[in-house]
Image (cartoon, rainbow, N blue to C red; front, side, top):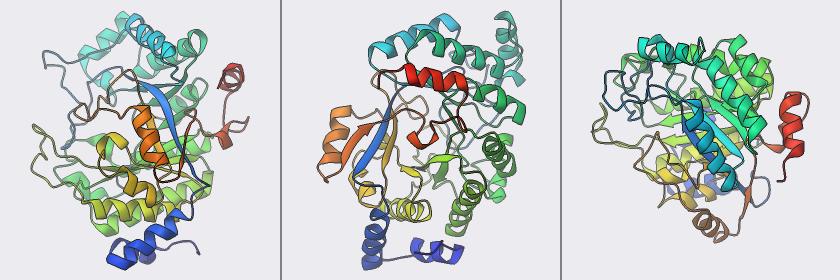
Length: 361
């Protein structure tokens, strides 16, 4: 099949019945053998404070909230990492609200620890992770400047930032009107700079936050354009919006199973060379359908910590993942947070390569 155009993608996203079955079969034929991968990780949310206030988020808290996590300090982080070592985890997923140091409370907490910014603190934690554990850091710190990405590249096996949508229109909707960091051009610039720096990168789309089918197609093509230019995208997440009590969008409808199935299939057709992931904890009843539509990665699954962004959705046990994968004739394989084709001097720092070579995996 030739490279898909916007018109092709829209045709697929509007397909019905038999056309959907054909679409799924075609997408499934693009996978690399029968392998379905996952990364055994530990989820470390360094702070819940975030300058964005998205209409679908339950993770973010303002510093005025009594039980808000202002800053997780290093002893607590290292204790969690020590336990993750015991569980055989290979990925330390570091995440936090975007630019939290814009809030006085976080700025003071960082200064009390001797750091000027969250990026500096994150670098220190990643370095200690490499030196004192058997885990590899994978960081999701929001939009970053090129110099910040360059610094973190030295101590991260991979990094990530969800594009979510390439549509600036959503900046005036309930989803993103209070979220300056969700401006698409800022997120695209971060992903582009990661490409210039040869950082193995995870990105993806959030489906069902008010975007049109045309905007979904344009968002996929934007990611394809970035990867064609820099070759650094290692996986694409197709994540479904889930309504939850207390969020601004609690009465909004989540995307249907068929909407998600067509999105997964089209993504695999457009990116046969890249892992396509659907979070299994958000789709417990539908995971096998997505495998049949071309999904070939489950993402990070933690035996130790919950999904702090979706705390109501527990991770499946590894044995459960294996059962639902192998029942369809696929083979479940554990992977590192960096995909094999990126484990080389072009994409990884000497420090990360040395760590990987020392690991028993």
